[in-house]
Structure formats: C-alpha cells, structure tokens
Image (cartoon, rainbow, N blue to C red; front, side, top):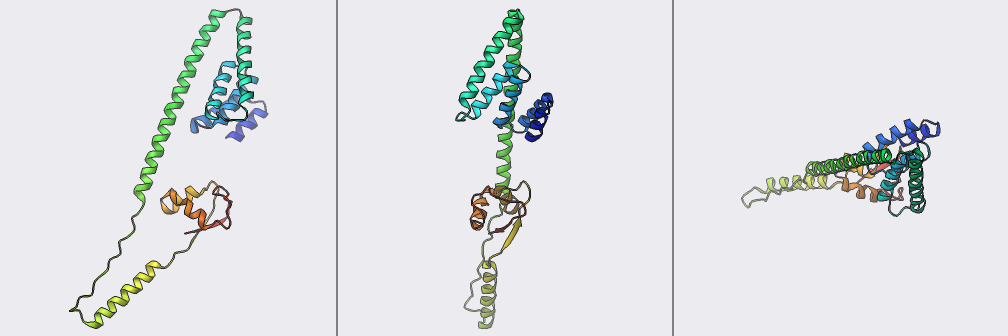
Length: 226
C-alpha cells in the first residue's frame, strides 16, 4: 500500500495518495513514515498547513530520535508562517479563527480515534497471545510400571524390554523441515508449527549456519525445525 501511494503521488494523483496513506494508518496507526508522507503532501501539494503540522508532529512523537528532526522542525515553522500569511491575505481573521477552531476539533477527533484503535489493537494482541499460550500442549508424563516381586520372571523381562523400547522411541529426535513462504518470519513459523512464538529463537539457533540474523529469511529457503 505504501508503494501504491508513492506511485499515485509521483503520477500527480495526490488525493488518491492521501486516501491510501489514510488507509495505511487505519491498519497500522504506529507507522510513522505514513504520517511524514501525508505531511509533505498537505504542505507542498494541498497547501493545507494545519494538517501538515499535525502529521509532522505525529511523526516526531513516534520517531523522537530521527535524523530528520531538524528538517521537520524547520518545515513546521515554515508551515506556521505560511498559514499566518494565508490568514492575513484572506483578510478575515475571525473567519479563519473559526476555521482553525473547527480544524483543531477535527484533528482532536482523529487523534482520539487513533488512540482508541491502538488500545483495541493492543487488547487483540494480548488476547491472541493468551490463546497461543492456551494452545501449548503440556508434555506427556511418562508412566513407569514397577515390577512386583510376585510377577513371574518372564513377564517382568518382557515388560522391561517393552518399556525400554518405548523410551528409546520417545527419545528419538524428530527431524522436520519448513519451506519459507512470502510474508513468513521466525515468529510466525514458530506460531504455526509449535503454537508458541517464543520457539522462534530455537529455530534461529538450529539454522544459524545459514541465517546471520532472525530477519534474514528468503522465500524458498528450507529451515530445520528442532
């Protein structure tokens, strides 16, 4: 969706680009780069300086340590100056103040909506995590049958051999593989194969010879599942 929005912007369809970026933020409210792209469009193309300032500030809130901080702060000041000049040119300060008040109300509503969406997403993530923990099957308890003194020797030997055979089968390592698909990550593979996202670290260790980092997956790559 970000690529689609960028293509629309480069093709001159800034309204379409704004629509896609807005949809991106509905799905991923914490995606700071979408706020920055919207701020640039409102500033440079739409001349909507209030909305530009809002999205600049949202970006800085999410990326306080960004290398672009000085540039964005300068653009915020410039947008404020351009907005003040626009008010003076219109010659209707009272009308502009009313519009400013309405715009601030709308921005507050948008901000409240984003905060509510974030709370809902966090709640859904907590619920999904709890469900994954509930799906983890506890390890089966091994049962041992003691041989009584009054059991005939032949039966005791057969029971002991059977128990030893079952134990060796249970301890035999199970080697499995997984072929990486588009969109896979170690955590998603761990959730699918083990119902436990924490097993992602085990998968990484088992494949450390071919993976330099957990995020270095390639489509079609065959992973060993420990």
